[in-house]
Length: 329
Image (tube, rainbow, N blue to C red; front, side):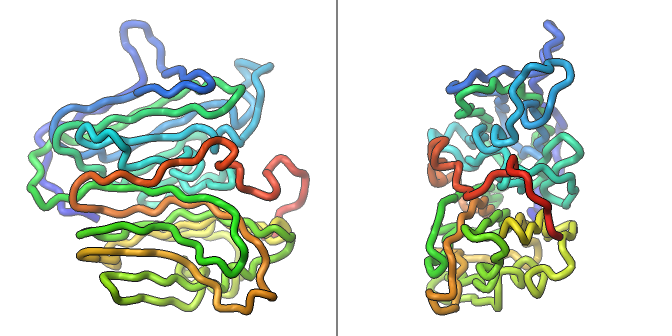
């Protein structure tokens, strides 16, 4: 993914406090706080975190249980003392679970490992890296466990900065679904995307191919499921691969969660990039759709990413996981 120099020290930032024995950082409803900071030059090699609240906690049996807390808690990562973050997304979306329906999976770069969530895309920094947690849940306190393994190294000037840009909303079926617009130089390296149509048993939003505008030229595909390296509306159901996968296909609920990462097939650009999906069908055949996504890119220097909307803006889904219906693979 990146050509990085050999580190001279390996370290880990953690929420564990040896003096008190406390393993967690508490973030109250409506609170935002810094939970980790690294000073120096190097790269964050692995971020892992977890929290209760999205499942029943036997040690606190009266605690509210609502998986939507994973949408209400926002992770912000600031590089080199940038005032605006370079990565900003809800926990659910940052780890590929935008519908807040937790599925265990282990890809090369992001995953959910039976209760924990991890990201291994290298995050270079030259002076500092800071992780903030923004708790937008009105009821639940965040009990955050976090470990970030990082390598201290002297970075050459050409090493870029990882950016993760979040987007979400509801759209008419004919509207382009834009995941990223940015300026370069840089490279596009990954897409985490969850979608749900307003009517049930409708997956025709997958007809939308990628339209990628690169420095004034365009890359076009044949369909959304084709971009995610599947076919026929993901005919065989879920699949977990090292660089691409289908985490969720619920035909009755018109919902999918997908991921794809680019390594040697990264999309390089010198000045501008716009990444979007656009459905070629006639509007009268299309239906409204909701989405949430994180688009990953490496850019020259630290640039701000788009702001994460408030809690109401994060609740884009027409139907939530708590509704009782069978999943159809």
